[in-house]
Image (cartoon, rainbow, N blue to C red):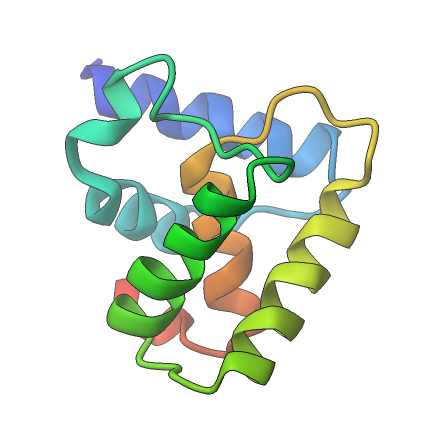
Length: 113
């Protein structure tokens, strides 16, 4: 099994166990692939919701550029929905899972399938 396939399994487990959702594996694989090499680095594979600069980067680079949503209000609403889904107690928030949730929230899942 490839390293990316192992990571997809780990992300799917988090979606199922921590978020209580049934993961769409095709979407998850597409989003994971779109993350590129960042998923292989321990630091860049995670998103810190407490780091405002990082949240702004996610909004600008993923929601804005990848998903094509440029409205600041819509970007803020999407990030808030994902932050709420994860909850404040989550200690690990994977970038691929965050992007997966954003793609669903913004109704742009078809871009990754």
